[in-house]
Length: 159
Ligand SMILES: [Zn+2]
Image (cartoon, rainbow, N blue to C red; front, side, top):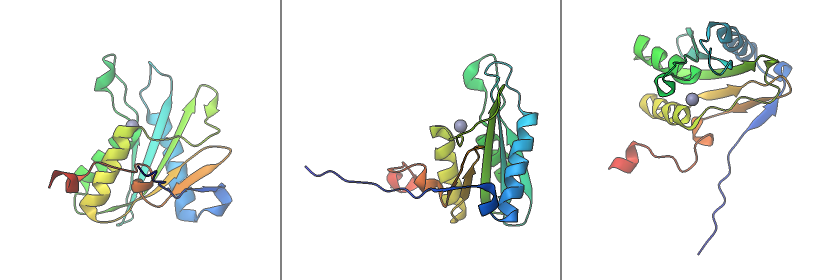
């Protein structure tokens, strides 16, 4: 028996340590929380995707009385991005979340299903996606969805 240690790479930083492009995308993610439909959780999540062609696509969580029918902000943004610009790779994804008390202090963390979709998107476009998880106290910057999903199931598993 052997224990294996898996390392992930996460940069904890402040807004002023990010590029103008990154800060702008976080603002777009925060702005997208206003477009959220979350009457059940009262938890508003916004996502913004910057594509290689400079386009920015926003998404927000969309809830439903039949809970599984809703969808997270990250997947709303990523699926819309991939359907509107199927030939352009996403470059950066920013995510922000707020409750009735305001934006979260700690970085918001994508759910497992969103992580799987981000990984598939990276594999589809053969390009890592930088991920910015916003919190008012600290921002997490990751250089690939692979760091969000170690031991991932992907298309190579199917072969
Ligand atoms: Zn999710």
